[in-house]
Length: 501
Image (cartoon, rainbow, N blue to C red; front, side, top):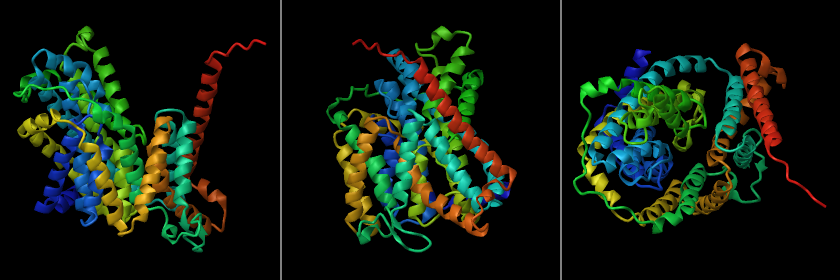
């Protein structure tokens, strides 16, 4: 176990890799601090820049952006009462009241130390668990891989916001898009409509940029006209003392606990874990009435949970190929763009990538702390400026990214089409990550399902041959039946309209 972790550090401890990780973290803090942007947006901006890089440096830059946005979101939450990211919404409750009391520097200090310690605890737990899960995953066959992918799709459709029906519709749309192109076995064209550009399938960069970049810009265009509140010029950062942190260690541990375990559930993300951590620390406090008025624990718990999620999401992503949130879905797409197959086969074929990214997760939190303490003033200064230039910049980078991958304008047209589709789906409550996950996992599930059937002479019972496969099937059936039961129960509890003739 330790040998694999040390191997990961050996692969990333070069000036080039460290520079990429630092640059990604710096950009992540900036994007997270600007209301209206998010971690997936930062990674979409970086996507075209990584085409000329090797796989590990490219993913390290994205890892830095993923970690950096977690802290950056707290800046605007505390200073502007406008969370930079959805996960930072909980930090507003006590962070902004503390800033109004003239303690903005202390609030930013609590956010920085909470994010750093929570992230490092999540990284430590992931470092201990990933080698164990990876060791089991390496022994898996095609039938196991297909079932794990199917279970991931069902879990994501179940746990994302909204109804499971909307999640399943998003999954099925993604699976439908994944079948476009030549059949992997007999090379028969499928849904190509006679266009040779579609013979290779849907371009992953077009899907990622369209659903996570253009769709988000279209959804948030109204923010261009929003003004930004002025912030005091002398706002800095004041870290809490070691003595105070010893008194408040429970908030960090509770936050890290929720972040790690909620993040490990595919499709949930950080938003749910922060509120669970906040509610738990408030319920067990001796002075619960102080929460919402500037209690430091109300900053430490959600910020610790917010960053510990990064360790939790790495568990399913690096071992099973299942994204924990939208950001890790983009990382899975980036792996495919760099010629690597996400999931169990990644552990077999590229262990240096798995443990390199794991090591990068820990180093990124160190960089995040250094940037947060040494360079906070430039980030706060940027918060004072108009954000109107952000969205055109994102659109330009999105177009460049689609074109640069193939030197062909066709993916750009696809990205625009997916962006419009994603905008309408998002406005009606359909979760976008489910579509992208279907596009990513669809080919993996199809290839392994057909391979498992070929090896078993088309015997479908191969998917129930072992106890792990039976457990996975039972889990899938349990989730589906539970969601059906809950939906029927909700329909019965809804008041029936009075119809008069």
